[in-house]
Image (spheres, rainbow, N blue to C red):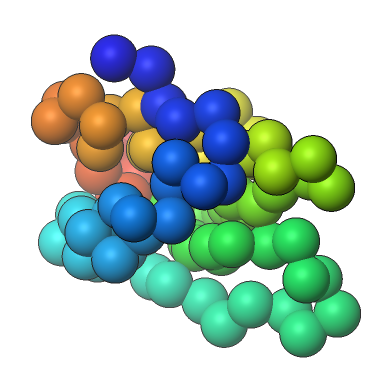
Length: 85
């Protein structure tokens, strides 16, 4: 299953996704007050990742790992926020 495309599809799963991220070692960050289109900001793999929406309501991601996290959540697939070295 693919990650949701629209923010309206994402909102109902947001609380569970936040918990899922925390359980896998991610740190949730406060949203920037000057970024009203941001939905979620978190640290994983030693980087900051953001999930937001554009003016048409479509989800966008700061980078591929942000989308990979949401895709893993939707598919109940393994994922970890911790960097293994």
